[in-house]
Length: 117
Image (tube, rainbow, N blue to C red):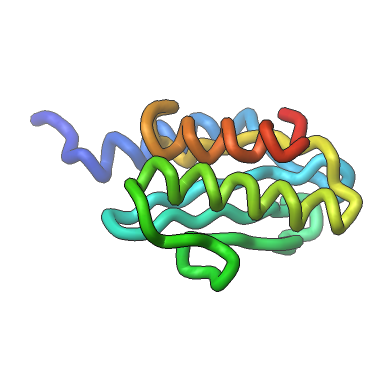
């Protein structure tokens, strides 16, 4: 019996999380994508704390345009917040999604704003 789409993503997510971990000096940039919105947060896994977050629902994000453009804006916003907080390098956790489309756009936006990963 084949896996459902969500079960497949969950398996990939767990496989990634065995390898990718964040600390206070180098937090994990975790991405969640729903049908309408996209969310990104920086997580310190050692202390179990979310350091900061940004999403397409925030006031600083222009919601006009395509979903890929909105994801790029969210990436820039999370990078600006991280640099303000003194965080320059992160590890990227794509959350089981393919590195394509909105996930790729968010990563490229964060890199363009000065975040290193």
